[in-house]
Image 1 (cartoon, one colour):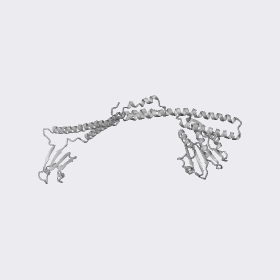
Image 2: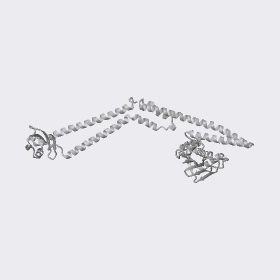
Image 3: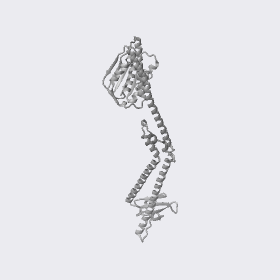
Image 4: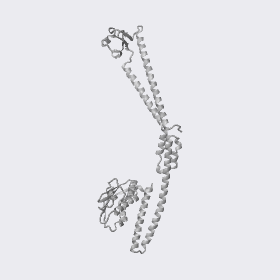
Length: 416
């Protein structure tokens, strides 16, 4: 259990990492300085030991330019400013300081011959320093990774638990794994509690959806079935022409009601027993839709032209596709006035196109706006509730739906 918040743990981890790295770099620089001092002193002692019993003087002072080493005289005559100078070729270091008078300068010459390291030794020292710096950098990076992993371990644990949960198949074990008490009272615990409550709401929603669709499927279809049976009995009896027309209207209204119920149940279900992977032919469903909606053309003298350029067989939910086609055909039949045909239905390999003529006289401003709706951003208001449902059915099955309307015609396209 973590007593500190995630923010404080990250801050402490960063502070510890910086402190350890600073200490390591400080010790490394201190060791390098001490090593350099010891090396210089050792070199001086070695030079003195080699010249014993005559003791060499590496450090000398000069007040006259003429007394300087010959290699420095020409330079000294230029009256250099006060400061420190280095002559690598002669292995001399010179300090220029004020002399006895303002116009004169004094010189302190330090002969480093035999004391400074050779070039080869410098390269080896550079390699050693580079190796030490690289090692410290790698250790610092590794330390930072370890410390930060420790600090954010609860977040990683929560992310792994959430990634392994399938929202569509929540189980009691999933609720135990996401239990907020496992993550303490810090920010991660708050996030875990929020996710836990969200999963509980999702589970309750899924349960309500299953109960509703199961109950509605039975309660809504039963009256429709009873009405259908009663209509079949009425059709077998001797009916007058007027009564037969009324029964026919009831039969069509019942069929529309059945289609609407199936449509909404199809959209409400989360799963549908694998029917979304079923293969079916397009043409039989188109013919069925035309026959079911043909009564809408009674008395209009409008022809229906079906042009089958291919015989597509698609994969998806056959009932959803049938509902979509029925809506497209019904809207085309309803919005075509007498003598404004033909209605064309074009079947291609990957799309279904339904086109109908519309009246040139616009009597409703809303209809006028609708007819100028561009392809790809359709507004389905005014052409029936079914087109909005068609859009949702297509999204559910991975199909695409578009509508294009102008002053002359309305074209709907269903692609797969």
